[in-house]
Every structure is written in C-alpha cells, then in structure tokens.
Image (cartoon, rainbow, N blue to C red):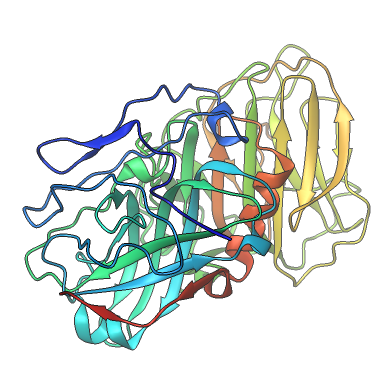
Amino acid sequence: MTIGLAASLGACSLDRSGTALDLRSTGQGGSAQQGVGGASLIAVTANSSSAAQGGGSSSSGSGGDASAWLGSFGHRKLVTIAATDVVTTLWGFVVPVVRTDPDLASGAQADGDDIVFAMLDGTTRLAHELVRFNDQSGALVAWVKLPHLIANDDTLFYMYYGDAYVEDISSTQTWSADYRSVWHMEEDPSLGIKGDVKDSTATANHLSPKGNFESTDLWDGIIGYSIDIDVGNNSYLETVKNVGIKDAQPRTVSMWVLPNDNPSEGGYGRSLICWGPANQTSQANFLYYNSDEQTFELGYWANDGQTPGNFPKDKWYHVASTYDGGTDRIYVDGVEVTSRAVGVIDTTDTKARIGLDTFGQGHYLNARVDEVHLAYAARSAGWIATEYRSQHDSEAFLTFGPEQDAP
C-alpha cells in the first residue's frame, strides 16, 4: 500500500503568494513529532512567481496526480520512501536527499535554486534546505521536511527542477521550532571566522572554530562534508550564543562521529558536545567518547552513565542521547544501548562546545564529526531509528523514478 503526502492534510492551504499555510497548532515540545495524533508540520515557502497557485488536493497511488504540475518547472521525478524503512509513524520528519543525477546536471540551474520538492498532489510545495549542488556532476545534498512518514506505507513525493526564473527558496523553516540547532559541518574551519560553521535553523547559533584548524580538516562525511577535530591542534568548535536548553527541559542530541586515536585520560572520556559548568551548584550536559573503554558516556555532574564497551575507533557511529525529564538514554546506530532513571537534573544554559568540555578539564577530542543536531524534545526510539536509517545510506533510503517532462 502507498500513501501520498497530500493525504490527511485538509487543514493546509495556499496563500496568495503560493505559501502553504499550516492551520493547526504545532506545539513547542516536539510532541507533534513523536507519533500519531500530533500536528502535522508543513511550513513551506514559495517566493518565486513560478510557484504553483493551486494545490492541496489529496491524491495517493504509485504515480501521483499526472494532470497536476507545479508552475513552470520543466521536469520532475517521483521519490519513494519504502515502508520497510519507516519504523513508526512520524510527523514533521526531515529527510536528506543525497544523490548524483545526470538529469539534474543537464536540466537544473547551475546553482540548484530550481531544485524543489512537492507533495504527491503535484503542486503543494515542501520546505527544503539546499546544502550544495554541483552542476557538472549533478551531485546534490538537500534536506526535505515531510509532513509525515506513515508506518507500513510507502511515502511518495516529487522532486521538481528546470525553471530558469526560480530564485533560491531554501528555507530555515525546513527545521521546526523544536530544533535548536542543526550543524551540517560543511564549511572550512581553517578560515577561523567567528560563526563560520553555520546553523541551518532559525536560531542561527553558528559555530566558531577555535584552536588551530587546517584546510585539510574538511573531509568527506556521512552526508556531504565533515570536520576533523584534532587533539594535537587543540581545536574545537563553540557556539556564538547559548544553546537555549537548561534545567530539566527535554532534549535530544544526535551526531555522527568517527573517533580516532585519543590520548588516555585516566578513565575520562573526550567531549563530543558539552554545555554548562560542572560543580556542586550547576550541572553540565556532556556526551563523551572514552577511547580507553571504547564507550560513549552521558552525564551531568557526578552522575555519569556509559554504554557497554564495544565501540572501537576508526568507524563512523550515529550517536544520540535523549532526556525526557526523568530518564536519559543513549542510542548508537539507531538502537538504544543504555538508559537510566536520573530524576530531575539542573543543567545550566551556556554556549556549547564540540570537541572540548566547557568546565575546564581540557579533554580535547580527536575525531571527525558530522550532522550535529540539537533538539528541544526527547525524540522517540522510532524517530532515532528512522533518522539513522535515512542518514546511514541516504542514497538507498530514497528511490527515484524516471524523469517526467512537463505537459
């Protein structure tokens, strides 16, 4: 069975500029993202005069609505997410689109501004972020916000391209309000410019390179590029402002990390991400990798927990930690590996660091990092498992149909 992304979205309509409006309440804590019954998030921008002025009708099936077409775009492809890759029903989920497509090289603008996405009705635009595009090879890295992924059903939507007059409509609305920060690690940290490693959310909490980064520290990553943090150069990344998560507020940190040789710290780990001081009156939130014990650690102050010791260096891992107000959990490669009842914590809101602790222990990291996401919500196990699947082999997660030409 298949389900189109136009289904069950009767509360959405288009305004006169072509912007899809969500007429439902979205909430703040991410509840809409956890399963059935939450609001469907579909904040979409359409700034071009060639954007569709209609749409919003419901359609489903393997081919979509062949009679409906978005604006002046010359081409489109049907995109499918197989039901077997969706663990549970999720709302407002953002998927990576990573592919090398000769049709994009020949049919899209050189800067990729006309690569856009629409629901299965063919006309209702989906919010997306264009990270980069190579017009010679057709290599694309983008993120698309889907109103929902339905368990046990294929999810279908369109990728459009081929409109010479469309300007950049990549949008921070791709990442809903409960995403505090999303860092793709695409920028060269050796330039040493404050806020040079960009946050893709509306929060705009960019990262400043610290220490001695080199131009060779930008590597191929899991999705696009990654940044190599070198303990020998005392390098790390620091946010330009506070993270905006404190006390016992819910949270999720997820990231890709490839640990390298890390000097022994006498049993202590090396900081993947950390914010807040750590003392008797204030607590930090830190996620570590311990190379001595080959574990990941999550802690606050004198209250640390760690995974079983089976995560050796020189391998990419998707690591996620959650806290829901009473229990914290660590997931590795989409699977929960440990959980603890920690009660009410009292973390302090400060700037965050990636690659160094924030409380003076000097535990620099030696690892590559990619796709660091910080959310003001405790994501479900199904969310994290699907996030891992969609990013681990992002090209295989999406299946593209043949090129269709405008009628």
